[in-house]
Length: 369
Ligand SMILES: Cc1ncc(COP(=O)(O)O)c(C=O)c1O
Image (tube, rainbow, N blue to C red; front, side, top):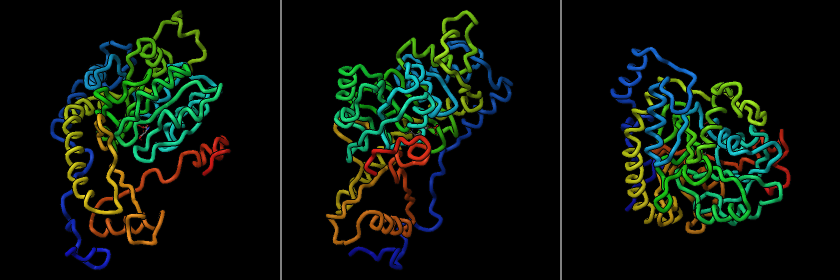
């Protein structure tokens, strides 16, 4: 017989004081890597792509490109910066419409706004939480210039139909792979599907550095333009063609050597951490399969998820309860918390209703929520 729930006065399943992993895990090797930068005394430099002025940054960019199996990587100071660089370097301009997901972090539409463009939100598949070719197609207008597709929670979008749709309508394809380093779709890595992609290494991520990000691309032109945008437009001589292209508004997205050294050390363990996440997800799923009303994350055949977030879907119709919506969710969370399980909310409202989008810019008009 099932024991009494902690919520109802039973004993917690996770004992008080039980050891939990504090994220990110910081090892002696990580500390030595950062100390080595201080000993060297080179903390930063303006860099030319492929240059040797910042040994940690250069090596990190090479190593992350190898990890992805892609041609070029630029280390930057945030995933948000990488997304803006990707959009700008691809040629997204003021007034362009960019179709994206309202189920993402605010940085996704913020990067579009920062490029002077207009985010247009398409719906998501309720099982994968990602955009689909069909939902994107519904939002295409003559002003649509690009799509910024998110691989949410470490699961790739269904890229082949999306890429076919983009080819048909001649749309620029950008990828928000911020939550998905190491994920794959039919053997192809997250981050490799569009002209350019953005990754985040903020402290919550599977690849956690604190703050920072990467732009990844297989396109030499994007790489050159993004490198220019990253450094306030200062890396080329005054007569370089980019200097006269006023449409590229460059910014300062440079990184420091200490975080790059820390990131290199963390990157060596990323594949291992992702494997642990998959193993834990499989164990959890084997239990969840037995419990009505709770659905584990859906991972279609041919996809490898890195489970950046392990999102549970509640199915009240399978339960003997009249609770629905947030009332059911909050009861479920209270029960888990009472058992000592870490549980959190993420993405409780579509981004279209966020004040920065709906209020200030008025882009929330016309949406059903
Ligand atoms: C889906 C998504 N896009 C963009 C970002 C922005 O990354 P950062 O926080 O490094 O700027 C994040 C990270 O929080 C994210 O999860």
